[in-house]
Image 1: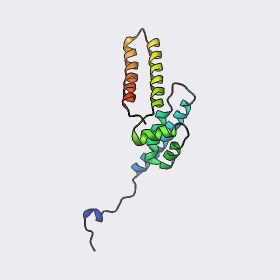
Image 2: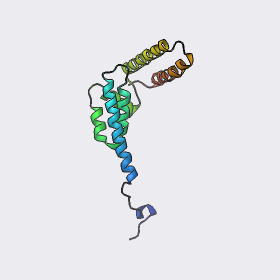
Image 3: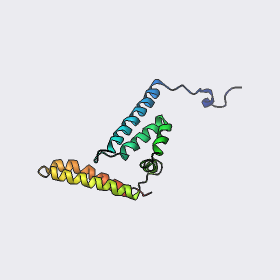
Length: 139
């Protein structure tokens, strides 16, 4: 019996080399971001959660098992999951992030007080990030 549509006649192709390499690349990006985020647990100005969100995204495309393991981590896992699934940030997370951005901006202002153009280049992204965080819904 012939296929009903053209779609029925087309076999699903095997994953191409490009898809395989892309998946492996995302897997490695996930590990790299997880590692950098882990270092951020010990270095005060290196954000952990941002890198773990990127790792969760990369692993969602390459290794969902690792994404799930990241979601089950006791402290940061629920925050990563809330962002990935709902786009929400906890109130405490907002306060912590905004505090870190404020500290970074104050340090830039102190270090670059004689270079207002550099201060603007360094400070505007921090201000934009703070505005973005403020506008996200709370979990």
